[in-house]
Structures are given as structure tokens and as C-alpha cells.
Image 1 (cartoon, rainbow, N blue to C red):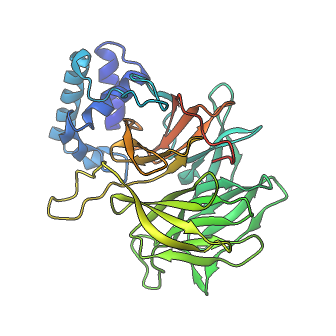
Image 2 (cartoon, rainbow, N blue to C red; image 1 turned 60 degrees about the horizontal axis):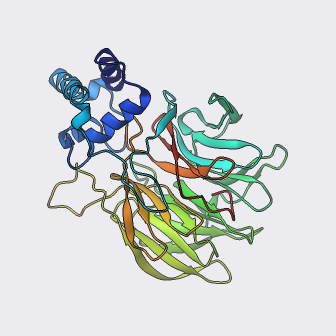
Length: 375
């Protein structure tokens, strides 16, 4: 049995824990004041699997969850804090999707609703009004980051070898490949993306693992409307999630392999200048030895109507002001692993949808997502 399923079953036997309670317990076991040693049972880059846990570890994990349920009234470390203008204290995330092969890169599309990728199944999924999932676009090639351009076209980053790069995948009949190589070299594993009001698309690219001998180094690219890709930044560690400021004069990029978010000023042709550290995240990968450089595993990032940034790291959702001031952390956990990406959605864009592993969470907010673009 999957360790997560075993834990949830035990929790239900010990008091009928709901999905929200399950999320809270996992958050407690991954908070600095909680049962931090359970990090060894859930690696940051993959869901735990029975073969990865020794029998004694499985028994230990189940025992800890049993204890956590038994004293749940005394576990407060995972409670959502009050962040003025952002979220009310104690707000809980609801599990709306679970058990998929993967879930990542959510985006709210007007008149369509919530879309997210199930990369392992080579499809983009739609969440229906009654919280069911259905294939929205299938037969893709490891789809990851998504963005909606000003023409209403859904652009999806494909990550499989031979297909890697940004492609228009919807509406039907509008499909197009925007870029599939740079100066004769194929992209590796494109990951984060955002489109601008001029019709251009930014995206991050990382080499595949293991790294092929002819792989390009991690970099950021910009594809101007109707043009060829331009490499606009490199030497960034492992660039991942990205977003634009509300006026689209600044590009923000997370470094998954470090602890910073970087900001760049945008030139008229889409190129970048004035790179600087925008924020330093507090989340830390606890599997990294103390004598090595820390890693936050910063992933997806989204912006709200006040210019605040929301970034997923090992700590949860880290909230940063438009000036780079750290405002707080909203603890979330996607059942089998850390969460990977997020988006504002709903009719008024006051709901955060958070995806990771095979799970999608829904979190009511005070803050409202930026209304100037889909994400």
C-alpha cells in the first residue's frame, strides 16, 4: 500500500479525519516546530513509494501520524497565520483533486475554468463545476508551464525530448509551435512561462537529467510575437517559475537551486537588464547537508492585484510584497510531496488553486489575483 494511503487510513480509523485534517497533519509534520524528521520519508522531488521506505520507517511514519491525530488539538505549528490583506488566520486548504499521476501548472482561463497539467499522462486537465476532472487537451508531450496570451491562445511548454518548447495547444485549429530550438540546439526541459501584452512569451529552460553531453545550460528565453527565441538571461542556477509585474516592466524568476527570487528590468525588445535579488526565501530543503549551500526548491509563483508575489517553496506559500518584503508563509502540503505551482482563480480571483504530485488544493483568500492577465 502507498504510505500516504496507509497514513490516511490510520487517521480515519483514529477519528474520521477529513481531507482538510489530513492536509493539516502533513503540514504539521513538515513545519519547523513539527515532526521535521518525517522529511526523510517524503523526498522533495518525488512522491514516496513503498520500496523507498524500510519496514521500520513505514511503521515509524504510521506511528507518528497516529500520535499527531491523537494530539491534534495541540498541533498549532501548521495553522495558517493572519497576513493582513492576504489571508485570515486559520484558513484551511481543501483537497479538490487527488490520486492523479501528477498535477502541476494550474491556470484559470475565463469561460473555461481551472486547467492544470497531468504531465505524466501527457494531458491538460479541466476541473469541472462539480470538481470532477476531464481531459481538456490530450496527446501532448510532457506538458508543464502554461500561459494564456492576449489572443486567448493557451500556450503549453512541452518537455519531452524531440518536442521541447512552447506550443499553442488551444483553441483547436490554432495549434502552433512557437520555438523548438535555439541556435540549432534543442531545448532541455522548459518549465515556467508567462506571456506579455505584446504577444511575446518568456520561459525558463533546464537540462534534462541525467544531463546530455550536448545540453544547453539553464537559461531564460523570450520568443517575440512571430519571431525567433532570444536567450535573455543565464547563470541563474536553476530558473523555474516566473511572473511579470502588473505594468510588465519587471520579470520575476525563482531559482529552484538556490534561495532567491530575482528581478530583471525589461527592455522595449523584451531583453532583460539590471538583474538583482528581489527576495530571499525562508524555505529550506532539509535533505541538503549543513556544509552545502542551502536550497529552497522555489517553484511556481503568481502575483496579486496589489503586486504581492506568492511563491511555493519548501516552507509552503511564501508571500512577498511588491517591494520585496517577506510578509509570511501559508503552510500547504500536497499529500505526497511539496506543492509545485499555484494560480488565482474563481469568478472574482479570490481563490488560490495549488497543485503538486497528483493533488490540487483550493484555498480561499482575502487577496485578489491580478486582473490584467490570466496568470
